[in-house]
Amino acid sequence: MQQRKRALAVLITATLLASAASAMENDKSMVPYDRDPGAAVGAALINIVYLPVRIMTTFIGAEFAGIVGLFTGGNVRAANDTFDLVNGSQVITPKMLDGKEQFHWNAYD
Image 1 (tube, rainbow, N blue to C red):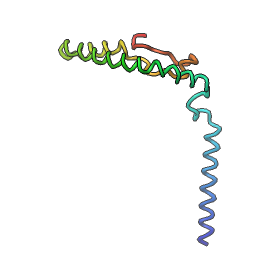
Image 2 (image 1 turned 90 degrees about the horizontal axis):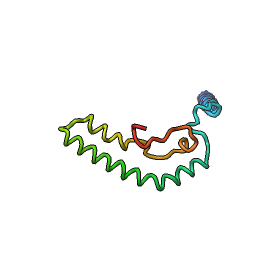
Image 3 (image 1 turned 30 degrees about the vertical axis):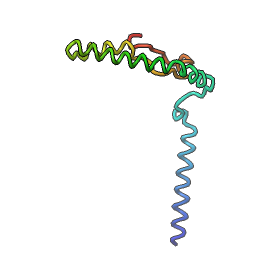
Image 4 (image 1 turned 60 degrees about the horizontal axis):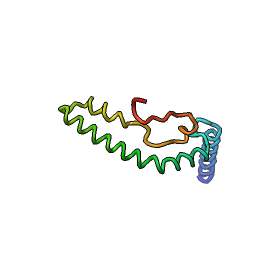
């Protein structure tokens, strides 16, 4: 009797897992991105050059925003407005290369 219960439990579990996997496979919203290896490789190659430049620009902009905040008596809005000059896209993504997403160098673009 106990073996039948175990076999039934295993059968029910396997059926539920198989149906969930089948539902996930058919649901296109579960795929978080469009597969495009060319854009992915292109974005990776561009980021080899872009990322070091972007990191330095963001670092310098953050330092400058801190100085502006300090010299304006702790005015957070002035510091944020200054940091927005460099607060843009930190990396290039494949969606940007495909034109599905916009590239922003700063918050004012």
